[in-house]
Length: 294
Image 1 (cartoon, rainbow, N blue to C red):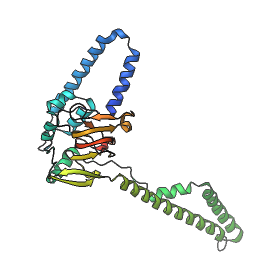
Image 2 (image 1 turned 120 degrees about the vertical axis):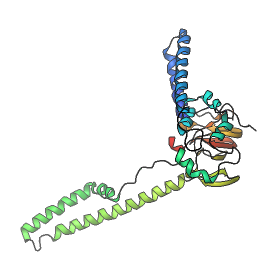
Image 3 (image 1 turned 120 degrees about the horizontal axis):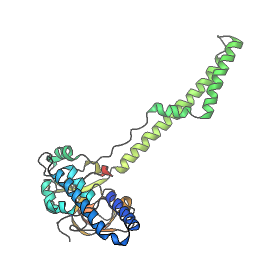
């Protein structure tokens, strides 16, 4: 059983970008450029360190000792030195006012949401009913019938006068209107049902520890600092770090494109990415970010 220790960052987007950059770097430079590579790497490290120092000097939210920007930076930049500066998982738990074994206090939920945000995705607004009406009118047959209704009304009025000449044109128009309304209402209801099904599918129950109790909550109710229990087959609900685990293997193909499972531990490979799947093992993770970032 692994125990708490310093953590290293494995942000999915950064892994992919760094992997691609390394391929280009090797293919474009000659073999005698090792010194220049080292010099460029040193400059990159200095830039990262400078940005980290600037983030550390920022005001902290509420009574927490770390900001949302710092958590994101550590994960995205693989800044192991900075993470060790925070004393690893135990130190991060202390800064987030979290009990690494028993979780957070429910009385802190609102303050955590205010400081770090919520684990919800910005959803695309649903199309209004009138959009469905307009889309239905784009049907070629209905357009032809509309033109016929107008033409029939004009010809009828000219031939039979205003009192009787409009009958045929209005009848065709009524039929077109009935088809449009019926089709639009049906499509609108289907869109609502599809949206509700997607919301229900995404509303995954998650096992967390809060107030010394293990409980089940919605994935949307997770906050930074939560201790989440993970096991084989589970999807990682939010960005976080492994605080305890046994033979944990993660499938990160959805983030990095790599099919090979990544072994996680609390010392060398502790970072877990939202959306990845636990291929094997079980453990506990501490939430350090939201799934919305992916």
